[in-house]
Image (cartoon, rainbow over the protein chains, first blue to last red):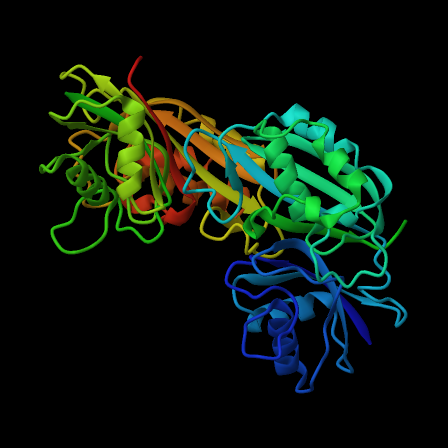
Length: 245
Length: 245
């Protein structure tokens, strides 16, 4: 039986999603260990994709196969019983065997959270990135230029294994939500570090270090050496993965 | 010269505001040590009031006296340089010598943050209290009954040093804010543990363990043995202190 789980995690203190050959703690490894404790058999958990060290998830999706038949809510309770508190399965459903958490994914949405204030807030540390001041409407106008199908080579870290740098962005926006500034981006996929590279450029636009048009100019150069660093992982969230068009 | 500072802190890992005779870490102690490092002289920092172990602050106010004359923003930068990252001074102003952060305070606002979802969220741990489901409008109707001047003996923990259990509540409400449920209460002062006792009762009303009218019934009994436990400190925030009527 194939089961699909939706997972939330606080990425701090883990070495990302992907299981590591050494002893490092990862989300995938914790999930596999928890399920093995329930079923008594080795199991492989396949995520919709990796998240880097320190990146959080509100709705990561993964699948695993098990001969053990249990209703979804029982799996949720049983897996959570064995997981560390920073990882929680929030849903589990049966799916047909041709459903693949990675290959069947149609859209992903990432969220990058920032706030601006004269002084860094201790209550937002590890969750949102502090910027002294942010011009939210300039950031929003800049980022909307990413919508559509483009070659995103400029926003890719060296070492990316992607075959093609072309991706489709369905929506991209920057908006105030309460006292936070939130950058959201939905696409059919993302290159390695792409969201953090874009977030770093947006923060420079927001704090007027570079002009609003820079984001699209950098994209159009299709050259990853033009990219301007990585925004901190601790404010990045994999928000959701969608499986229908 | 009398200086008044506004302070934010993540209360986790500290033994509350108040300096302790033993070696325990407290907010007041860290502030006094930071200011002593700047001025080279012992200093006493007087807060608007104590906050308990684990309670956070977005706008705690305190005063201290110093012969050292510096503009506010310089004090902010200098004190923050010596503080641990979980405590931040966000403002510093000169005030006349008759301004007293505790005695001059006219109103305080506390915020208690909750959220409801089928499973506890790792990204809200230490910041908001999880309740499976909450009837927000029942909670709001219940808490509005506290507005006005009342004897709040029922909402006081044994050991309170308050001379009178009578306080005036200017406003009290429960509302959704994004995906959170926020209880806010503004009063001329609060008895020991009063906000956490009220929050615990409100969560029982919200999850339909007790009827909506229970909060006022308990208040009217003026008997602290009727109180129903303490809501966790990690979701309580001293939001602001006001000094004008």
